[in-house]
Image (cartoon, rainbow, N blue to C red; front, side):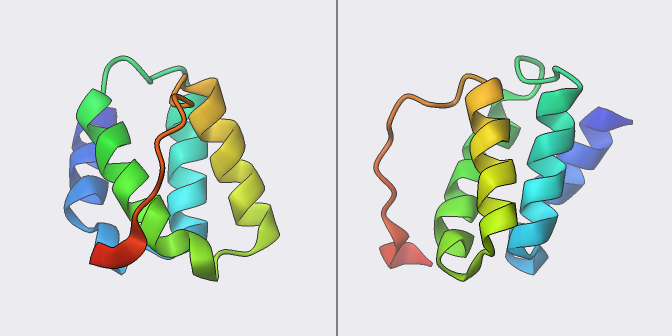
Length: 83
């Protein structure tokens, strides 16, 4: 189930709001599915960089927690020029 959900979400990132991204990343991280889906996290990083400028603070805090909990905190600088 989670494999299919992460694949579908990864294929539709442009249609997801910052709130959708935050909830999805939070759920995957909370369920400790971080190592099972490395491609998902890379795709979500790219999507979050594009969505962050329009995100509400609650979404940003959920995303920060999710990425930190998933160990995705290597300090990558975001480039939103391709958004």
